[in-house]
Image (cartoon, rainbow, N blue to C red):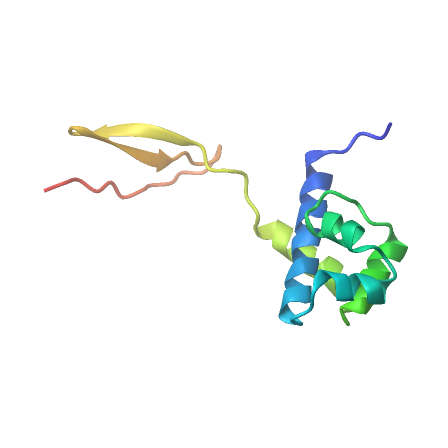
Length: 119
């Protein structure tokens, strides 16, 4: 059994989101896009939800049905993934009687967050 990494799951999820956005921009129903791609609506739904990892042939069929070059879709996914950051870890800094959540800076980075105090 092949093991998937978190990065692969993230790519699969973002790919599905990108395909769904394209379909919605065209104002299409899932069943219509699936029919033109020659796949089942169930399979397209699973791809869009990041549950299935489509082969290059399936991806080409889906993007073709959406009128988008497969290469452009892959590049868009890559660009989106570059902007995705790990979830911010928060720690509480007491300010008077109220504790304020402040994002923790990554190692090696000095960050200063303004702390708002109630008047």
